[in-house]
Image (cartoon, rainbow over all chains, first blue to last red; front, side):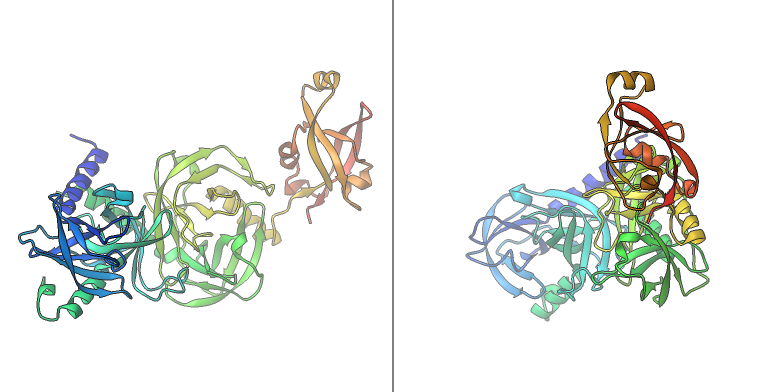
Length: 201
Length: 298
């Protein structure tokens, strides 16, 4: 019988494994690359707008192949972008519900910090919502988390302990404080960008 | 598949949720509000001294969403503890825990309410020491350092253990770059003193000093290597009245050895105020004893 810490380790590794199957790397010409998640198996990818800014877009898929990508929609305000690659049958991320997240709950963020592929960081939810007096310039909904986001995490998935997407890693306000765009905002963005089609997922 | 991780996550979130009734917002400075802890159901609120930039016009944001006015009972800059009386009743006070139940490595949560809702960060107990003299001259019953992230506005909020019991008050103001928690026994002492006197009384001699090596012969006879060299004497202070001069070296107070400032401060608790104590000094290599009536630190 393993102790609780090794059971936690096993569980966390399982969650990570499932998330990495739908994790991509997004290149936009310049130096550095961001992350993204496959939202739909026919090649719809969700990432940050600031990751998809710049030159010709290419995406490195979970199997290591790099293919050209097309920008389908972009919202600089929400810092979200939808890309498409001409590859079918991709494993997808499972969307969760960021609204049901409470302070204290564990989350994991995955991406490619400083170019390290598929790296994970974990922590707890500091809070959700738009009530952030320390960020008076932001009246937006944020998922604020006590973990270590770094350049290269941007656009990547933040997931709950079941591996469901709860946010898109977007920025930091301190070395140990990461901000994610909540998945509810992602869903709204996709609904507006694609009124009748892929956002149905 | 994610059973243990899920249980862990739920336990953390439940602990935060159970703590929200007693974590309050303290509005006492220009910029971002800070946090506080309900200390008694009838409205006593403990917070950090350094988050109160003013003594008047203080307000407390309760878990109910209500914002009530509060008066300052007193503040203790030496331990960075302040006590407010909020215009409220029927509040929920937390369970408190003594630092003896803690070990280095234990999981702890820092909570705060800089806005409307409670926010949380997770960390572990990094260091747990014996009693510790703060740079401001206060004494903490235990030195308690954590690696929790002090989110903006978390000062004055609680550190809680795995059971949701309050371990103490978090502050970043006592040591630069270090998250310290003022443990419950120290908070309790400060609260009692603030309720009784409106402040935490400390004894006062009125000297500036620095440790100095004693001559070999004196060091041997006193069995102490250093004393406190007096480098300034405040006008009208107990030290001046007693005839202590610049250049004297204090070697004992009340029969207790004084090797450094920490020793001296430990010998001047609030109870000594008004008492006359023997102070042994070296002047020109000769030991002398003077009587000093301890005053209260301004």
